[in-house]
Length: 192
Ligand SMILES: Cc1cc2nc3c(=O)[nH]c(=O)nc-3n(C[C@H](O)[C@H](O)[C@H](O)COP(=O)(O)O)c2cc1C
Image (cartoon, rainbow, N blue to C red; front, side):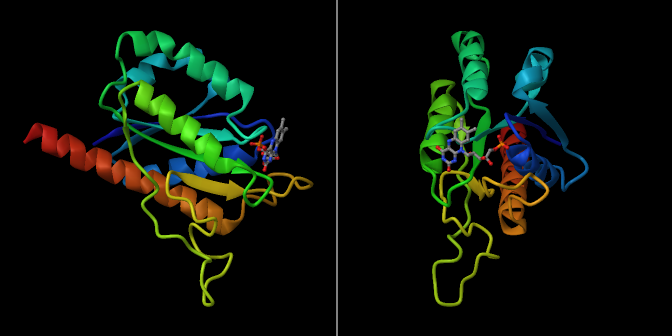
């Protein structure tokens, strides 16, 4: 059994849908404990993060990087950084934005550097790129072709009831599942 925490910010609900999909994927196996933590509530959940085997970070892409609210959480985590509290935990990340590209990669890089600063072990998405051939389509998982983490796109003029797309939510689910699988393998290896 592993403990997974999904810590995310969402200004308008789109990234929250992606976070919920990551949570659903991570908890596909009912033995695992998965906590979904909005960054605004993080002060009540530092103990949950301390106990987690893996922390999955999520933020919308705002102005080519993480949102100010997510950055506030990242800066607050410097206290944990000073104590090496998250050293050797698994980490992964996801982001959502309105443009197909939208500089989402910059956000994932920021999330992976945050994890590296903490001495965490970054888990990449692990899926081949979709929608990149004559037989591909926007319904493919990883249709946005990311390696570092899960990406999603939501139209700027529509609410979270319209986006991200099912393929992006499926991609998010697979990221959550992948992290839980690795966390379980990792704890079994440590126990052996
Ligand atoms: C302040 C701000 C900055 C944004 N910057 C970007 C950006 O750099 N790239 C992009 O594709 N979309 C950008 N967007 C659009 C959001 O990423 C998009 O609306 C996203 O779905 C919002 O997610 P949320 O509902 O979880 O907040 C920006 C939106 C806001 C409010």
